[in-house]
Amino acid sequence: MSADLSAPAPHTVTTEAPGRTSVPAAREPASTARLAAPAAVAQASDRSARIVIVAIPLAWHAAIGLPAVLAARAEFTAPAVVLGAWAVAAVAGAVAGVRLLRGKPLPPWPLAGLLLTVDVAVFAAVGEDQLFTAANWVWSTLGWFFLLALWGRRVVGVIALLSTHAAIALLAVLAHGPDPADVARYVMYVYGTFSLPVAVFVGGATIVSLARERAAVSAAGHVIAAERDAAERGRRDRRDRLALVSSTAGRVLGELAAGQADPDDPEVQRRCVLAAARLRRLIAESDDVPDPLLHELRAAADLAERSGLPIDLVTIGTPPPLPVEIRRRLADPLTGVLADARDWARLTVVSGPDEVVVSLVTPDREGPDATGPPPVEHDDGQVEHLYERDGSIRWAQTQWRR
Amino acid sequence: MGADPVAAVTGDRPIGVAIVDDHPVVVEGVRAWLATEPRLTVLATGDDPDEVLRTAPDADVVLLDLRLHGRMALDKLTELSAAGRRVVVYSEHTDPPTMLAALDAGAVAFLAKHEGREHCVATVLAAASDRPYVPPALAGAMVGDPRPDRPMLSDKEREALLLWFQSMSKASVARRMQISEHTVKQYVDRARIKYTRAGRPAATKSALLARAIEDGLVRPEEIGIYRSHATHDRPTP
Image 1 (cartoon, rainbow over the protein chains, first blue to last red):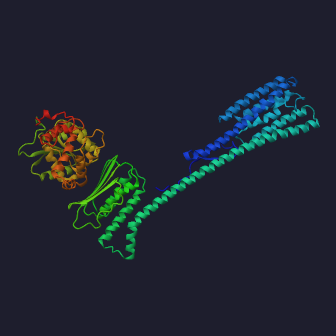
Image 2 (spheres, rainbow over the protein chains, first blue to last red):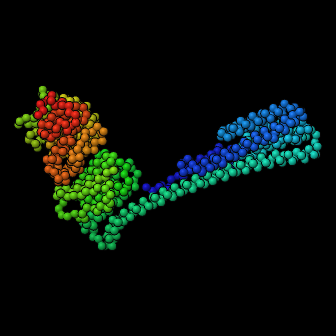
């Protein structure tokens, strides 16, 4: 019946290890069918950012770095070192890129170390003439490789690498003699190599983080909607049951309170017994048990027994799962007869996969029925209701067929 | 034990009953119930079936508590039934599978301990003449039998069993079905006879079936493929 609103919120997991990201740890609810879509949006947006982070350095390295290096190869101090370093960076970048796209990035710091070694080698081998040209490929390209190495980590790491890169370049510039013009050019280069990669890194991370937040918010919305549905259903169930009870218990209690009903009147007593039985059954109805029909009948039998009626409840077979409406129609007519019963009662349930027959037999007494058999509220052929008296027994039977 | 253990109980000789139960108070209670019927005489009582039957080898009916000293005596039941002993099982274990297992093992009848004197006397009398008697609890077990190889019962037989189980009054069942009490009993007994085909063959089942055919209760073809074990015991009409 009603959902337990005090139940804990759906299990949440953080998607990244602590300390590995600059973005707030996204809360992604555990995978349920309804929550899969927002999580997929977050994943897709993370993947797009990775493609950009992999594509920029590799494209730059191949399209701008390589032609410049080849064109100026005769003018390097040590051309083999510059070309070799280019190849090392290309291979390392390609491997790191593939691994990142597959979600299994290379260990960042060894990769960063390799890149810085390449950096030092190229600055040493490139020579004074080519220091500020495109042939010194490390200056403009290496910053992008740093992003590739450190994607998904804090921006501080990228800044630290870029700063080291700038320091190496400064040493190279100063090594060739401190020319004020060179220093000015150096400052411009540093500005250029710093600003763009950092902007892309921060921008990409922010987009991914926003997408994750959006996914989390959307998932939380679904959870709230589901809880609201459950609460609404629970409220409706309670209201329906209350309406059922009010029709019997409410009326008789009201009449007793107003003095219109006499507690000594057997008819009033019978109505009270009936209302109590119905209340007991409605309480049993909301219990979560394996055999709800038997549980509800047992509740009725318990109540009758406690009012001093010896009652036998014999069950054969296990009833199939039945909707609450069918169970009510099977049990309610018998509850009415049980309220009238004296001396003894025999309640039997015979169940098969396609049929359930419930029967109540009690001794017949002189005189007419106090109220007659309970009215049959529905008759769609699914539940049959029989009631008869033959002078020796009263016999009520309800039968459900699939 | 006599040479022909399932020989019909004849003439004016009282029917000898042996009671096997490990609760003396139950033995005394059942003895008192049976004493109200002059045609019955209790020959021996005790808690060991073999010992009791050594004392009373001519007992016509054995009333056997299915649970002896904490264990189910189904194997003993099978052994006695195969030897042609008419065993009426009476037990407080009235779950349908146990009751059906007792019938399969060859018990002539199954009586729930709470079913009282009337059913007890009637069951023993019927058993002595190889006639079926179906108390209400057993009727319930038969009508709710979920086993795929259960005997095929007719609609009337099922209805009679169900109503008998519900009301415990054949007169009320008769009024409800608008037939005579005798016919109600016939439907119920016929259903019981069909159960002689369930489980392993036993001399007692053959005797029940043979007597039912003799009485005109069933025709052999109604029981399905009729492999007569009864012919070894007695000629069929």
